[in-house]
Length: 339
Image 1 (tube, rainbow, N blue to C red):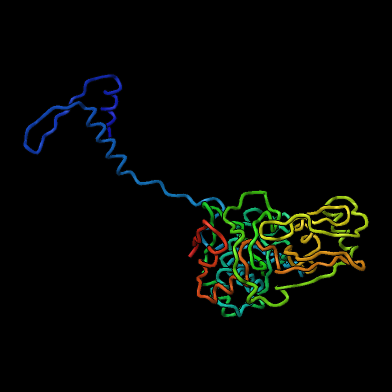
Image 2: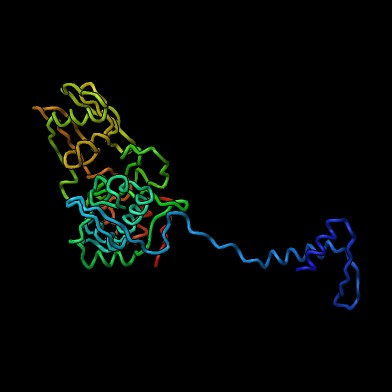
């Protein structure tokens, strides 16, 4: 190394450094030292070990322990992430469903969990990583965990869905009404691009979904509707004597609704009234009658991402968990982050 430094110094001061080398023929020739220098540099660079890849911030390399807020009791507890995911899968899907459908749900639930923990949404509310509220996080019910659920979670242990190296928004719903929606249409989500969401694809979920998801009707007291409109618009709605859908999205869902003199986004109305009153924005009729807002529609949920009844149908057809996920999300990778 000292000799190497000496060569460098001589070259820097402009000396004509000459070295002698021997060909295989035994002849000796003299060449400029700069050539030898270049050769040595290339050898050193070529032998150098590549820099180790550092894990991306927020990407765990081993199973984390998370904190969970139990909304029903106010209790806070810690548990391993995979144990938590089992409780989510058991609550979000029928534990008796095909394992591949449960496994696809497990991968998305794990992705949803890590993406939300990284964003710190529940930390701001309860000082924990997650909660058992479906409005705040995901459903959770450890009492429903069975052999199928444990097998699905075990098979997908550590697996998450990414797009260009980042967690996706791992949306899912109960029943999309037969066709998926974009994030903008189904959720009014435009904060960040979500090019990986497959919108407008048909999965025939209504062929196996229960009758209550194929077609439904609900009557909502106008007082409740007025309160929701006031919350959305920030001002009193006034009397509501009429209602109509004034804008539809590409999938056919309502995106804007006129209630009396106020216009509100359909996803916002559903969010504020609650899914027990507005099962989806896939509305087929809307009227005001006898002091109620009467809605008719199909499906259950926002319709974005994976449809759970559609996932069940695909699993019954022999599709793997990865194939089910790629049916609803495009350009994504299913990666395993811990053993």
